[in-house]
Image 1 (cartoon, one colour):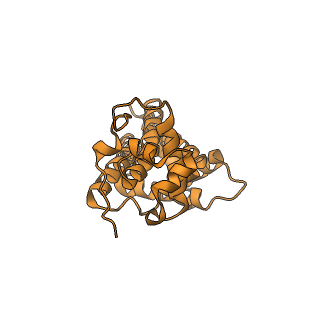
Image 2 (cartoon, one colour; image 1 turned 90 degrees about the horizontal axis):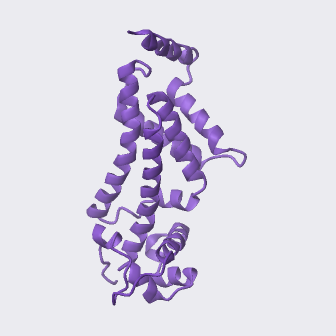
Image 3 (tube, helix red, strand yellow; image 1 turned 180 degrees about the horizontal axis):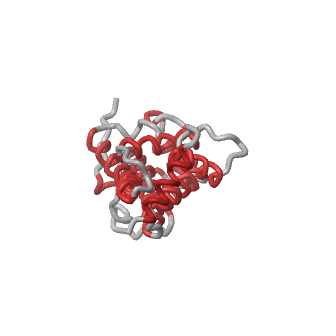
Length: 227
């Protein structure tokens, strides 16, 4: 069995230059990443060959290696490209919503909207292939923690304001992320991201017990009436 070269962060994010210093073709790296995502999502990592990606992208195998030094670097670049795009969108959403509850709703809506149109990215995100080694796992966890913190911060602010009852922010964040994963993965054909986002957020904030929503509204009104 051939020895697999481990991908480093520098290799994944290295500048788009050819092996002999030639300038990159505009848009080609993104096209290779898009195709690679589909190929990796269609079968296990160990069954994918660089030739498969090159053929699907309509380029030579050597062209793929100009941008990505190994199969693992290509896989991680495809995954992290989507995560970083999602992170940027969530940061914009969070910055536009000073109210923590409204921010939670907006974050949930943005995440589901993003997942809905990117089934390939969703499949890559929730497969175990990223866990090849400890270094790659740490890269993945750092990226995941960045957008999880946006949810935790909104929860902490809501707790401080009295609009969210005192819960463990970390546990609540993981529960919400689990809900989003399940709702997207097992959605019905007629579901829409907007409807799903509203349903998930209401269920998360108010639970399923009768009277819970009314109690939450009372806490919100009391918090707003404080001097």
